[in-house]
Image (cartoon, rainbow, N blue to C red; front, side, top):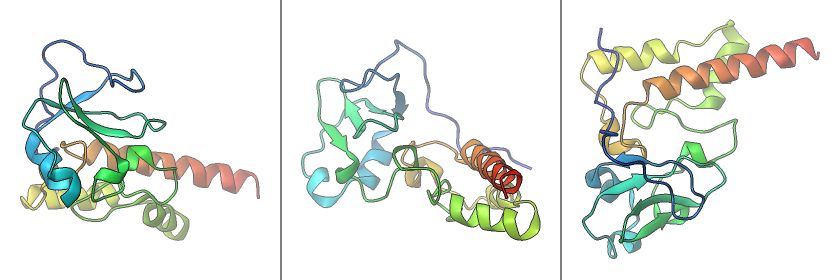
Length: 160
């Protein structure tokens, strides 16, 4: 079964940091940026080599060296890396989110979110390269979210 639906964007070349927070950024395809920008933000989009800033504390989502910078208010979807833990969407193609994962763990003792996403990947249904603000496969994000929600549930159980 396929592990990822799309390759990670190339990280070859020099390291580029966000011009606002100085966090190491990740390359992201222009198609992803254009697909997720609001109408008003898209009207000022210029072609370029865009980067994604993953820092939770930074308002910047996308920037291009020598080009425009786009913030959280400039994108159509909440970017999970920029939102507080709890109800964040981690799979933009199939709606897997931390709230549902936590509820599933509470109800059944486990989450099958990773299994569900893998099945969609195997069926060729995902479009992470366009729908995920990071422009890359979400499987690792979903796996990490399941673990994060499992740990939160365990801490809650030990404090009850």
